[in-house]
Image: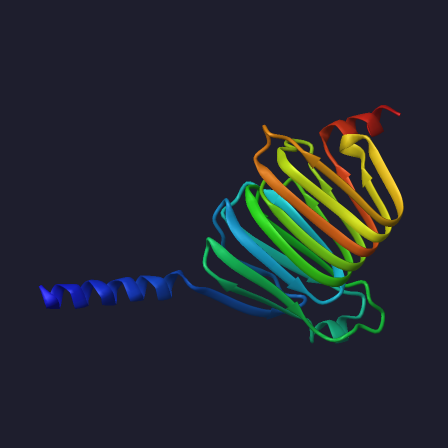
Length: 211
């Protein structure tokens, strides 16, 4: 029995090692790894423009471009974790000519956490909890399919919260928009110290198209 227990433990340990995934590539190369729907993905990035898009797949696909291709080689995309709890880390020095653009494709049902000092974060067609923090720049969250949030908390210290999906627009100092819906399922937290937050849902886009 003791031998069987040891063997089972060794098998479990081996499975855990297999489930762990880690990739590290420079900007200019693509990064691909398994990622299950409803997983938790954390993104920790140096200043950039990041577009996170939900599509029908069970994997993460990351592509990266920059005007300064020479310096871009020093930008690293590192993915670590498992298909259910993963982290994407983007590191590298300041680019002379800037315009670092990163596209992250993930399963449409995904829980997101994003931390970045400056830049632009766009999240499109992703269903799940979101926690996004940006020191300076812009956060845009949009969906034409579902806007199913139980709790929404969006704030800026200086700037504007444009919650068009709720028909609200607040600008100035220490602006906060909060909304609760008992029938909703997910939680949305977004904060920019200096900049703008746009919440664009299905109804807001339809109104914009009709103008």
